[in-house]
Length: 490
Ligand SMILES: Cc1ncc(COP(=O)(O)O)c(C=O)c1O
Image (tube, rainbow, N blue to C red; front, side, top):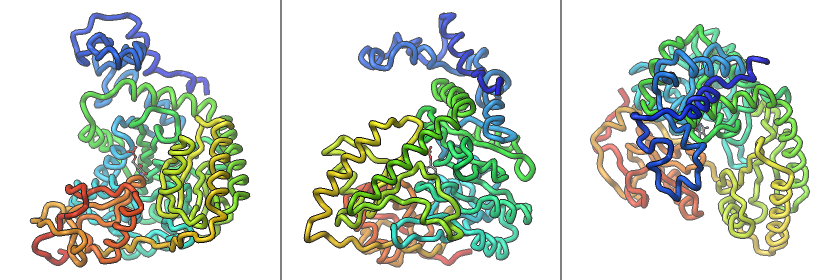
């Protein structure tokens, strides 16, 4: 633990800045003097003084041998990994590194279909073949959960030559499958398990939360320290356990995907967030769990609202729940999640993490205070007072996105000859683009999939509800790119 009090990267950076060297290197703003005065005044000279670059004394993320190496080693110790790599390109960068480190062109990768677009982008870059597992859909809440051990077993029996299995642990809504079991199963085939841990940095640090990827014995995890662990936006880590994957290969790949101008503000925020989590994580998360539990109890007393809790557990895909996530089902009020998101913004200046057609998601973190939760509760009570007694409530039937069939390998589709067709008339065509709602960034259709009329209706249902649908080059969503000459899977 003593070791964990150290912040080698942040400390050395501050010491270097204090020496006030004369700089003939980038960044050209030189300690803020060249920065626009309004921005400089706002952000402050302290921040600008450590906006430095990989000069000799400050090590180099691309070939760490000094303070960055030490900081990464301390992070590995804190996260129970053999190696930790810092990412200044978010968890998206770490996810792409995981996939590209283990997949070469033509390799199969077993993945849930409800993955973040970074996984699918990496599959396109690698030229890998996705073996999709359909996640378990929750028809009451209108959301997708994780994948089951049985589904992974079936996929492995059919594809024992897969290069990797990728699991989301936990999902955006905090649900986890039995990761230990999935890891044991994949390892019995000598296949590595890669974990998208974008929404789970904190779970490693509290015994009442689900197992983290490293605790469950996974081989790699892409973990967003910035989302829930207190570092700055865009800073994430990639944890590695050696055996089925090579840390040297991971270092080479992450370096290929990373800017050469790495932000030391982001890197040092990872160093200090790790210290805080290692030393005080459990105590801080205990408070978070209490706040979230109190909020959940109170929300469940409010007419027309339902906040998901551990009562949903029991199935293979719903093995455990990170209860710091407040998934609030709002359909009974006759409103969509997006309408509630807007109402909260306009009336109470509350911003939620995401909304969909049926729910809003509020995350409770180490940054929350009792007063924030009190405001949320006050707002939700007011919302319910206004809408739960309305006689003619709009019916919000739950539609889940239909999972399209994959007709072409995603990379082939992405590079194929394409034509633009009106989205409303695209049913039956093979897509050359992604279409998704962001957040959460899970594609409704992706390159290589045959878009159905039901997919198109679902896309427009989201658009008409005001949700942020994106992906196609034509951002108005009038036209999409589809494969010109359809060809069968090779
Ligand atoms: C499940 C999941 N994976 C990966 C990511 C990517 O994380 P980042 O935004 O840090 O690149 C996200 C972001 O929303 C996500 O929800």
